[in-house]
Image (cartoon, rainbow, N blue to C red):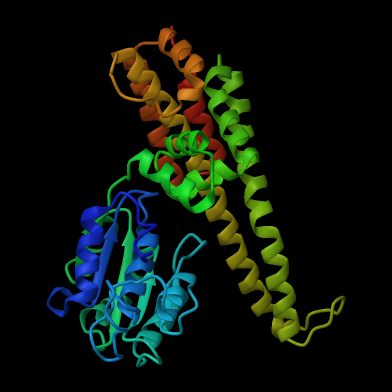
Length: 393
């Protein structure tokens, strides 16, 4: 067993991080892990953090004394297991579910980074969404990364190096992750979750090797049905009216899923805040305390907005995978289909259009994704996309 077992399909990245955890000459105190969604950036970051804290035996050797080099990630000692679980006292993980990481959150991180480790070899700060920091926020972080305390390690994660400011990436050592092979992801699902091998491979392909999504598709029949419904939209759109209805349906489903994912947490957070403020259920909130409630509600709205955008973006990525398959058939390419279980629909769409039309449809989906990221109203962005998906004469 090793902390690296779940970092699938990344032999080069694992070799670099493993060596840094065991060889002081290869170690630095600021890292930037980049790779496409689903490549396992956050998994690799946590594995690296565990390897840095590891004090277990390696390859039959005795436990590593505190103060010496790291054990490299045995996966069995207390330091490894608590780090992987996110409960190690010297590990801080920021994984925002809001639109951006706020400047106040970063200031808190900087204060945490300045503290001496309480029990581990390092104080490790993992920022899973470094691309969600505004320029002003990133500038606040710059000094801490440029001159960190001796026992502090920053591990930033982003889709690409271009998603963070040049001043940040120039001070970090970069490690690039790739999209893992679908078979590697399927093998992980079989080994870790006991998923049927055929279902695991289908889920891995449908998720385009995104480990988290593949796991959800493999374990949740409702998730598979929702994805099938999104793909069916491509066949249902025959005119402008169908396009408008389809766009509205996508937005409504995203809103409902966002609400379902956040409603229970929102209620718990509000109840905890009211209790902390000494306000009993049913009491009127005094005016002097209303600003704190409003701040919480604003944060919750941002979280719901982020969730809705993520659901919509995932739907568009699924549609892109369908048209990718259509293009594969149209060009006669000898590669596996992402959506092999929808072979009939893929071939029907391929016969009903030209490669040029398929590429234009894919471009329209890409434009819609950019518009959503630029805060365009979701319904407007989706309607323009759906209209472009209708059959062309």
